[in-house]
Length: 115
Image 1 (spheres, helix red, strand yellow):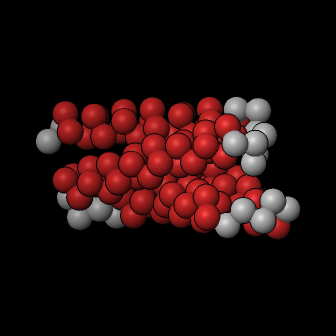
Image 2 (tube, rainbow, N blue to C red; image 1 turned 90 degrees about the horizontal axis):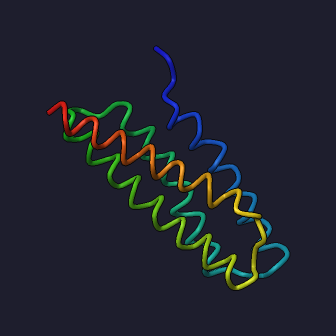
């Protein structure tokens, strides 16, 4: 079975999140927003992995929907950290996060149409 594109893209994104988190706590001494970022940013891929073994289509939709919420929250933290000059990522993480959001929306819609 081929690996899903969501699974393949969410893992490197989580790695980026971890590296930004390490930089924020190590160099900037920023602990509050960085913890929110790492929680939501790594949850995206975790939930996608959980959805792989969903018990039903409804369970799959639920897990993917929660992943979508986490991706949206992550985008908020990325934007806030950029706009407050804690990070300067040249929109790389923003575009990656938006791409994950678009793919999650598409996956959820496709699955709902097959119920």
